Each structure stands twice: as structure tokens, then as C-alpha cells.
Length: 522
Image (cartoon, rainbow, N blue to C red; front, side, top):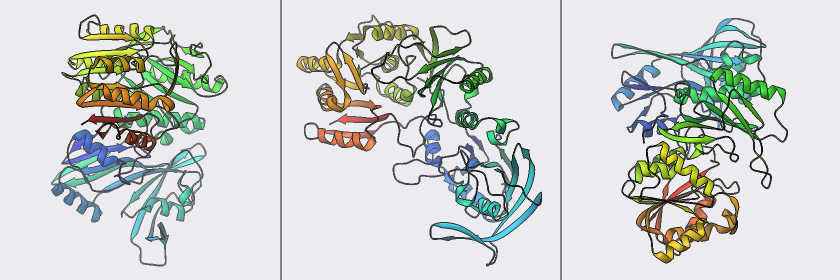
């Protein structure tokens, strides 16, 4: 299984350049949270060195060095003001002059950076007006020094505070409209220039749109900056996650699947928004309303755009899956499990794998493709098991092979029977629903967690791995750890971190909707 959704970066002259997204710290803000440099160190599997920083809310060009020697040289260039930094920002305030330079003394007072004219200046910024964008003004800022919050403080002092910068006098907006557009310097005789794409809010025509359109445009641009998703036309990834409360959008190959979270049906502006998105991305669109528990889970789609079919094929990291628009509230593949499926594919070889609450069996498929010794798939729905076999066949696997088992059973009853038979597995995947009904009764993760995990641990061989996942909204990651600690009275195991969520979902400092953890039995 080959990773096809990869983070973008440019490497030149011993430096790594990235187009940082807003909302991401340059480096880890506290233990347990990854910053930008830690994320790219993991991707590149090597040490990176921070040579300059961007505020969390600022997007754009950011540079890391790949060695301590290069870091020392580039840091010296920044300190000697030999790096040309060009920023763009937006304001809703008029300015008296179209070009000027501002100097001040910046220092920290009581956990806040302040700018004053009463002391010798240690900061200098040149400002140049570019153009009007509707009722807003687009400016260029070139900082000649590198003090924290320098551009923001100087813009505020000159009466053109940056849009979205509430800390420094800016009007309310959906984000801080400050972007590091380019970096330029000469290193060891080589001219280095890195320039980013224009942010959505700096483009002609975009600011005439409704704010929801801007936020959606920003969400798409975030995936473009991270993955260049426009080149991943056949892949599956999330295009809008929690940027908007009203809906989430997934790409499944040639289709966009919209989860609708409003009480009412889509209004005319919503429908026009989806039509525009369909046209822009050249995708068919399916809009599914997310109903309250107890409502009919097979309610009709609210809306479709294009010549849609009830089933189609899409890929995730090269693996094929059948998606359907007429079976439940999901098309058949939960994309927040993408990194977990990659992890399973890396650990399934030569192991006996048990996939509980299998749904359409993404975990079973990647286990079989990775060379698992056997794959046992369990789900209470015979329809989902038939669908699972279809996914096996799509990937050149014979679901009737003796290595593969499909059990139409309640998962807890299956585990209890497996315990009696003393059957063991080397890898167990347990991704239960928060709530579910079957002929055997009602399943609730909050009530059945201990029973489920205890029986699963009895079925796990020594040094075996158990991946547990839950979307239960009333638990956070800490709650999950506390519940697992109680099980240590009965079992000896080590808690390992699960793979980090893909960057098309939550950012590192956001509590994930989907919580995952790995147990290794001692």
C-alpha cells in the first residue's frame, strides 16, 4: 500500500520550503502537540532546523534548514537582514499615503508585544499599497527586521490594521489576513527564491463572495497548499472538515460527498455554492442530510449534481473501493481512518488479523493486500459483508480463499465464542459505532466498552496489537486513556500512540473527532 496523499515541500540549497497553512504553529507549542517542523520531520524522516518563524495565524512561505551548518548560515542572513521577505495583508481601513516606511521599538510587556516611538527603533517595515479589492485594500509589507508581530504592530500604528487581527485593532474576519508571500536570499553563491500561491482573500473577485464561500475557498486552498489535491483527481480525501459547522465535504474520486448538518434543507445560496464547486472541480456532487439518531438512516439524498450513479469506484492510497449513494449516511469509506489503514497495512504481514465492526472492510482489504496470514472479518450486517467481498474482488483478492473469513455476527458474541475456542490473533482492529441496534439488542460504546475490550484482549496473542477507534462525542482522548488504564488490573499491556490524523482533518492542537489508540499485549 503506497501513500499517494503526500505533504508538499520544495528542497533547494540545503533548505526545505513550505507554504504553511494558517492555524499551524511553526514548532510544537507544548508537549504532545506537533508543530510545522515536527510534522515535516516525520514526513521526511530527518532532522530539520528552524531558521525563522511565522505566527500561528499567518500563512505562507516558511524555511527550514536541513543541517546545523546551513541553519547557522541562513540564520546569519536573517540576522543581517539579507533575506528579502515579502508579505501581503488586507485591511478595511483607508490610508493617507500609498507607500511609506515605519520604524519603532518593539518589546514584550506582560506577555504582549508593544510598539513605541519613545525608544531607539529596533524594527523597520516598508509598506506599499497594491490595489483595492471591493471594500478592502491589499497591501505589500517588506520587513527589514524580524521582530515578533512587527508587521501587525506597524500596520496598526499607521491606521491600517490587518483584517482579522483583533489583537492589534483589526476588524473581525474569518482569519488573520496576513500571508508570507515570498522569501529570497543568496546562499553559498546560489540565488534562492521561493514564492507561494496568492491566498484566497488576495484574489480578484473572491472577496465579493459570501463569507461562507470564502471559508470554503480557504478550506480548498489549505488542501492545495498541503497536498496539491487538484492533481489527486482519483483519490479520496476530505476537502472541508470543521472550517464550517454546516457541512463537511469528502472527495471520492469523481464524486464529492457533502454531509449536511443544518436543520433545514439547503437554501438557494447553498445549492449555488455546490453547483459552483462542482463546476470548479469538475466533480459530481451528492448531498446527504445527517439525521438525528432514530430517524430513517436510508433517507433520500437531498440533492445531486451531474449524471450521478448509485455506485462508483474510487481509490485511497492506490486501493480500490466501491462507493454507494443508496446505502446509509456514508458512501462506504470513512476517510478519517486513512492513516490507521496505512498503519494496519504496515503491521498486518504474516499476522492473523481480526477486523471487528468491519463495515465495508477497508481494514480487512489492506491487511490481505499486505500479506496477512489470515483475515477474519466480522459484522452484524450481511449486506456489509457482501459489500466487503466486492472490495476484496476489486483489488484482485479472492474472498473465497481459505485465508479469508467473513462472519455475520454480533461482535461481542463472536469474541466470547472465540475466547471459548482459545483462538488468538496477532492484530485486532476494533472500530465500533457509538450506538447500534441488532437482533441481539442495543450496543452502546459507553456501556459496553469494558466488555468489548476485555474479550478482545483475551483474543489477542502475546505481543499482539489492538487498534481501537471511536467517534463517541462525549469522550476525548484523555477519557479513552482513563478507561484503558482500568483494564490494566486484568491485563498487562502497553499503550502506544496511534498514527496522527491526516492534515485534511484536524490540526495538531485540535481535539480530534475520531479518537484512536494502540495496545500491545505483554
